[in-house]
Length: 246
Ligand code: HPA
Image 1 (tube, rainbow, N blue to C red):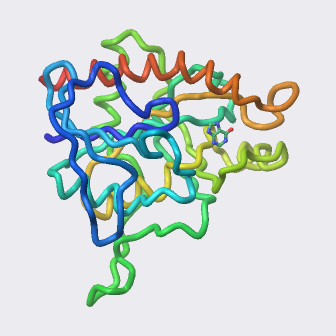
Image 2: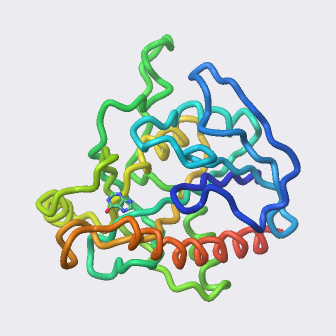
């Protein structure tokens, strides 16, 4: 298995990574967010990509998801763990908590969201009933137990367009729709990985309560503080995943 990690907000780099080389790729879809890192984590070789670029500069709706995923496939990755900062919608999703979602509702729009854009000689519809790869999810769940990181092992991830955060009414609607978490980058990333037949799972790190669920407005300072705690847990989890693999 060749694993790739896509790091989101709060995880532009992982200090524990031993970088072997940096690979600049051009793709038929344009430029990926950053150089790909070929690296070792805990003695295991993997690939790392900073989803928003390094430094963090590309907003969620401007990320070239197709280039990012295509490049990882080109470099030999067959499994991707996407790490993402999210807002908490359901009661268990408190700031600093980690969830491994099992479902997605996509509210994003206007993104280049498929490799099957009509240039092929047949129309392709991938099955997306279960958007995340169960075996990879199970590895993350087992790694969390190994690392002693408390997680929620299911959850529906709502992908909103951003870059603004939601209104309180939008969050109330997401809750009514059955969403547990809300982020801006989970789609089309998950679907593109599936189109290229790559395993894909997500670690959601809760940065804040969704709009209207806590008193007052959401501050960037609060998000950054919670992400620091949450990303530390996510890194323990990633370390445990690769240790279990070795
Ligand atoms: N909404 C959407 N995306 C997010 C949030 C949020 O509240 N927090 C971090 N990413």
